[in-house]
Length: 293
Image: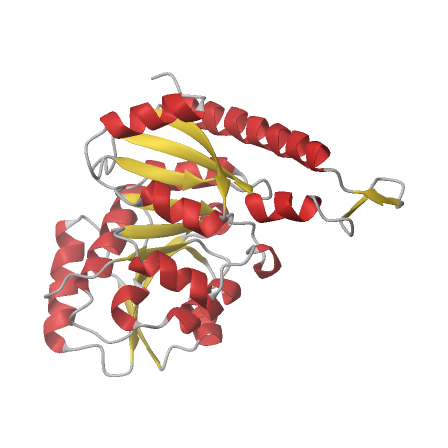
């Protein structure tokens, strides 16, 4: 499928798709889209009929470029006034590079795709584009210092959006070996368990389940073992981590290729999740929990 390259064309294609038929991939110049698309390729049961690559030009940065105090540091180390026209050219070049890399990776993996450039506040644009999507994928650089403003407030906004899942993709997918999921509270969090089982099966990875204090029950353990067996998985490793502080979670998931967590929409734990994103090196998949177990 040819990718739509203009804003109007991409908008027309998005409107023609049925609800919940897209996965929106938010592209970051500092993080490779290839890793994000490889994770998406392992999403179970063909979750989407099309990928939408999204690059957001930062409107606040452009507004700042109009200030007399705005400066640009060039390769020689000298400073010069930052002109809006120069910044716009740089953004267009970044968008074109992201489009090229995204389309190349999506075509190589055989994934139908489109591409769109938006201008505005990054988080607001992501939520707007993903409002009727199956999932939102946010590409992140490997280290916590490069999370580019994913704070508790931003996570709260994403949690309020009508998304089934949000995936923060980064290089740990390549270097890790296990699928890890955490159940902070227990039996009401089976949606994230099901997602972890499906991902373990699709990626042929072993599964580890971490339980918060009091979360593990005989009934849940039996259900989990039966579900893993039905999926053709080896018996999952079950570990109790007590109160799952972010550093403890990072230690337990140090060799994870993906960490699956319940969405903070139900738990209200955006501050904890913000800390966990900074502590973990693995990608993180947030799954909206069912209203009933």
